Length: 160
Image (cartoon, rainbow, N blue to C red):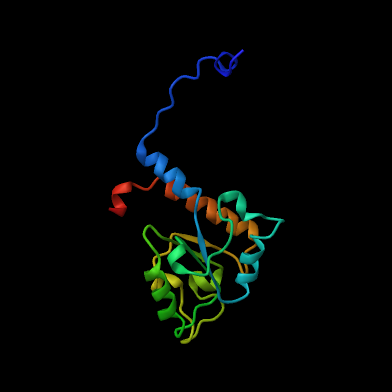
């Protein structure tokens, strides 16, 4: 008895090229770690065995912007660090996405002074904001899942 007889009629599977490409993109995101403060510890713990970010196709955090398509900004960004952040973002290949992790990256947090950028969206375009001070690893995973959903619905023409 062959495999065909056991399975029966498999039918035809159809999808669009756009959906297939976006599915592949959303399940193979390569994040670049950009940990600046206490949020970085929570970001690193998502890679550990308890939360296992590898389930989402993110085997390890990259240290090079040329190998990454997701920048997770975790922590407060100072005015001196802002040009470095922008330079790393510009070196990332398209398509690229940004997650602002924590209150400091999202809106400056409790640091309302001249030295801290009041939201990383002043420097780079942010796709998903993850709230908390610091946010738990589950919250970052939820933000990543929201980003995956956003990627699945992006038109391919945007990147041409």
